Image (cartoon, rainbow, N blue to C red; front, side, top):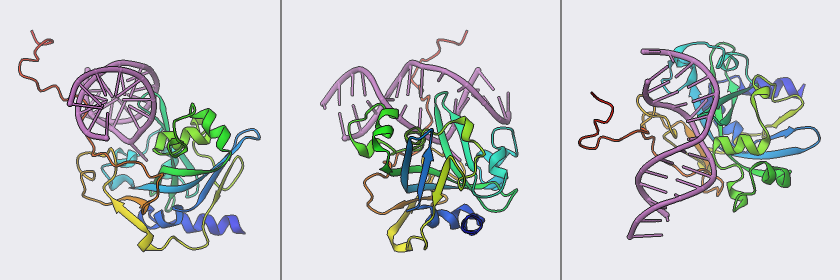
Length: 217
DNA sequence: CAGTCGATCTGCT
DNA sequence: GCAGATCGACTGA
């Protein structure tokens, strides 16, 4: 079975599976409106020992899918408005996975444009994890869905992308331990125009201005 | 361009 | 309460 072997190829730690997912194509057919993305950038999360991972504090209702078997989609909701999608890797219980950070729309581009509100350039359609999820029409309902079964279809390349075509660097938006360059667990296809721009992780509220004592008695 | 900020839900302290 | 695996609008050069 093609299905079984594809899944078993993902049953390795996410850092190893990264070069399998780069160059793969993920399709979501939402009621006859299929959109396909060729994945160009991913980020590895390495389970409950990884301080940057949602799994770090153990299993919860939200991250439950991460702890399950490989080849399922972990969809989470964040910042009150965005969905992001991971492909679960590794063995059951390991909670390792790959965040889909960017891609190139290869099919259903009109649908993707509509969902994204017609951005300036098609490069922006799936550049960034929440944008990619929105272009594909991924939402909470797909959390836990099998990427090898309708309405999803993941097509892995026959061979992993050669190492020399892949760049790596610090994960985006992960600060503190495991974030600031400790692990180069963000992987992208070197030179691909759809790869999201790197921004160093920053704490949001940074008033620190002298005399900001409004709320203090 | 680069920097800043609001939107607004979830899990944990 | 608060910070977060983010984005887009807005500001100012």
